[in-house]
Amino acid sequence: MKFIMAIIKPFKLDEVREALTALGVQGLTVTEARGFGRQKGHTEIYRGAEYAVSFVPKIKLEIAVSNDLVERVVDTIQKTAATGRIGDGKIFVFDMQQAVRIRTGDRNEEAL
Amino acid sequence: MIRTILRRAALGGTTLAAVTLSAIAFAQEAAPDVPPAPTLDRGDTAWMLTSTALVLMMTIPGLALFYGGMVRKMNVLATAMQSFATCCLVTLLWVIVGYSLAFTEGNQIFGGFSRLFLSGMEPGGSHSLAASIPESVFMTFQMTFAIITPALIAGAFADRMKFSALLWFMGLWLIVVYAPVAHMVWGGGLMGGMGVLDYAGGTVVHINAGVAGLVSAIVLGKRMGYGKTPFPPNNLVYSLIGASLLWVGWFGFNAGSAVAADARAGMAMAVTQIATAAAALGWMFAEWLTKGKPSVLGIISGAIAGLVAITPASGFVLPGGAIVIGIAAGVLCFVASTWLKNMLGYDDSLDAFGVHGIGGIIGAVLTGVFATMAVTGAADPVGLVDGNAGQVFTQIKGVVITIVYCGVATFVVLKVIDLIIGLRVSEDVERDGLDLSLHGELVP
Image 1 (cartoon, rainbow over the protein chains, first blue to last red):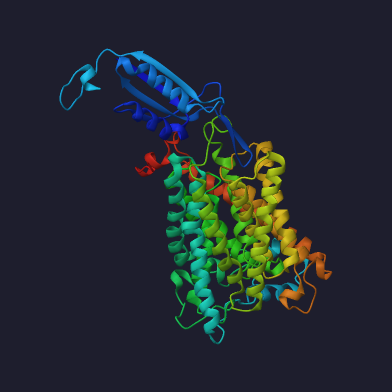
Image 2 (tube, each protein chain N blue to C red):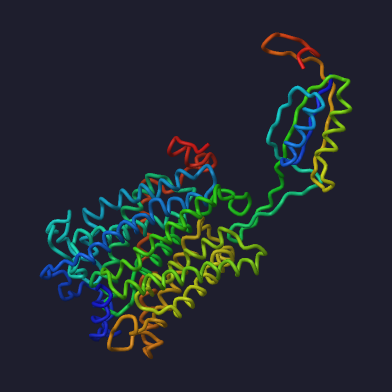
């Protein structure tokens, strides 16, 4: 089991969700996030006062998947979320020790 | 009409020399409030009822939204509350003493006490400055001006004044500063007698509020983190709605100051619209050229600057003059709010001085330039365009008197409150936001 965390551009969310659903992903969690990478922030000006805003709005996706799906999920997110410009985001993959479905108490692969 | 009467008094020959300390010291004028035979006019009354409601709308919700949208999210309710509470407090104080001090017979500085608690205001009677409408309407119309003026000051010290101190300040300032200045200009006092032209409140409302704002910003000091951490506006759509309500309400302010439904009210309305549009574009293009982008906050700030500047001039000027006044106000208020403020280093949070003070001064001086007998119907030249250059100097004298009186009196009021209960919230309160700390509420 792997835990995949992806940071993507907000407007790409629906496209990514559709592609992942087609792949057989059963569920994912979405968080509105802010951060910075190579894409720098922007400047806001209010009556001459300039503020550098260094964190850019992003979407954080969290998906738990079985080992056989990992490569395809990573591949799909990468292809779907890419625009080719700086700020497209990143994908991180972790080993996952355990998963539990709270309603039934199912463990691991059965809980995904 | 108020301003016609004042102009006649001026042309009657009050000389410069008369404006000495001895003249200031309680010289009596001919009684301005001898009850005239009441011949109420239905058209005038209907318009003044409408105007009164329009001017009230400028403060609630207009100013509450305009200012509320510009502060950080943690202070939005406290800021809106300042406008709303000021509205309520001033209403009662105006009834108790303010109206009497401003608009009854007295000396050169303030009026008398003959209308204390509105005593003697008969339902069928009228005020000598507005003979064709009931005095109850005139009193309420003037009340809405008395409400918005102190409420405007709050923009200068947003984010950092205690609410208790705010109430004391608003109440004392109304009595010590607003009522006397209104009396001096409109109620038969010093400046009206000198011939200072102020159709709808350029000196009484805007220079007055702007200077008081500047003094407050300096006395209270800068907000924590000013210039270091960002203070982004929480919602400029609120500010845009507020500015738009102010604009619409301003027709009651300016055209209502005719105190009649007549041709001069019509011209006041037209020039108000024209100057406001010119100022909004003036600020927008100035910002676009120097900062790279035309902002929403910029164009609405410019509109307010134009409304402020045309206020003393409406009822005196033609559309051509209105365009010049508007462009001057838009560009110069932009410079004041972006460059002058930073250069001098005071923290006028929402630019009460930069917009109302500077805009008011520009309007007051240019009124002396563009006021014309073509609008007032006077037999003699009025402003510089008519060939009466002296009016410009009269206007400048009015500006200086207002700045000095308001500046000194506001400083004293603030220092007294600071000494007794303190003006400023604690650092913890300021850091956590006034909404939660002072009012126990939050905007999610």
